[in-house]
Length: 269
Picture 1 (cartoon, rainbow, N blue to C red):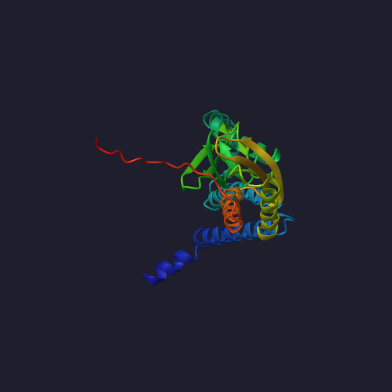
Picture 2: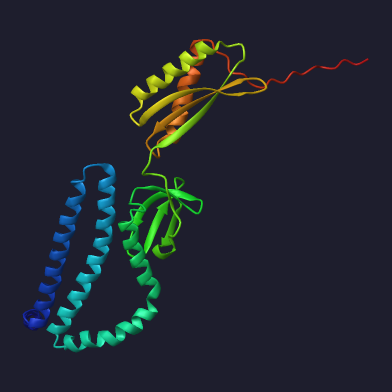
């Protein structure tokens, strides 16, 4: 029985299949490793993201090509005439083409997205109100992940309107309510000092600007400031800078107005 098994292993079809599968695996692994090294050589984060997106698409395409070539070589090994199969694919291809029109549209749309630089993997986007990060970009679909964890999978052909909010800087506008009795020059100096310190303290901050009085409200003077920062960092920075302003106000005894409720206890007559 062992001899029969060894004889089976020594047949051309068995060891040929093993060699072909192994060779195709080596080719795919080598090409995949080479493509991944290209990402590391990007000049900046955006270029690395763009390369990663293109490579992800090519990896998917490469996988299908390797599988098709492997199947054809294996069929040839087992004595099946692959030439007639390839020739027959011309007629079959027309039929399949009609059946797979949507899939072809997805692939073409995917290539268009890369060429026109709509977005890359890692970008922060808004698609019909669903805001999140591009986590996967394939031949047929694109996946967006929300901050809360939900994942939205979209066919590439349906991505006609998408807002990319990652490739440009973000502006944060902060309204700082302050009591009417506080001196303008003093308030301006305190807020400006906080903003300048924030620019040094937070590496995500690019520009800061004190814009002056934005509104004379019923119980407060509302000062407006602008902070320009990297995308996707605006939410954390907003909280951090507001905290810094509150601490500075407390330290300098600057009042922030708030609604107060006065209660009168009635007396029985």
